[in-house]
Image 1 (tube, helix red, strand yellow):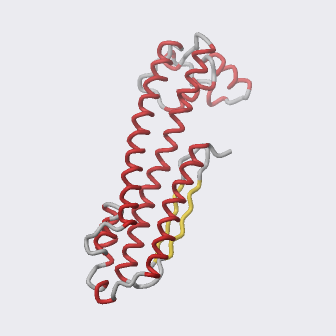
Image 2 (cartoon, helix red, strand yellow):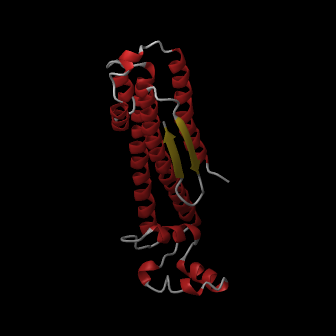
Image 3 (cartoon, one colour):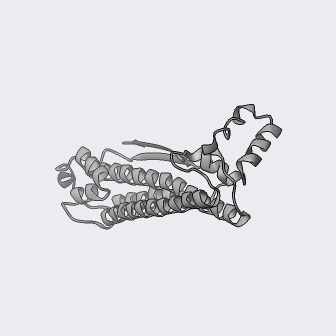
Amino acid sequence: MVSKDYFIGFVLFVWILGVPAVAQNRADLSNSTSVENVSTVSAKKALALSILLPGLGHKYVNDGKWSGWAVTYAAADVSLWISLFGSEWHRNSLVDSYTTLASGSAQAIVDGKNRTFFLNLAAFESSEIFLETMLRNRQWDQIDYVSDPSFQWEWESEEAFNEFRDLRNDAESLRRRKSIIIASLVVNRLLSGAISARKASRAGRVNVTASLSAPIESNPVLSLRVGF
């Protein structure tokens, strides 16, 4: 089942991809700007400015004026950056909290440990239970994992164990959300650039196709194609 974070991110992705594009295409149909005026601007420059900051390409094409959609693209970009930095700050805070908890309540040595170690701490109440499970499942390649004392642990209470799991799950959700926000930042730039370049060149309709897969255990995969 796809997580709530993926659903929210995908809705945001679709909004950035679809709503401004549809409205912009409708506006283009009713735009009365003369051909002579459009020919004085460069589609490549409009695209480059939009990649630098979404909305700048629209501003350039509109004789330096901030149109409605120029502001919309720029505001979306600013909001996404704020969301990205806010999520990262919150995630780092959660990571500090669950590593401190593991060190104090599970007697775990957390320095230098990777994501797999903390995943095991969230799945098994002690390194002994981990070893018993690996032996029972005949996963022989895993039985040496806890042979080193620095990779051993034992939660002092079920309450601390459950708190660690909750903190780590929240941090993982924010890690996945980061990938979605970054994908949305890229889409916002490319879409803003494609539409402003089309408006500048009047070379025809821009064809934009995109997909965003959201697997549970891996990062979202973004696929975007823009053609003039």
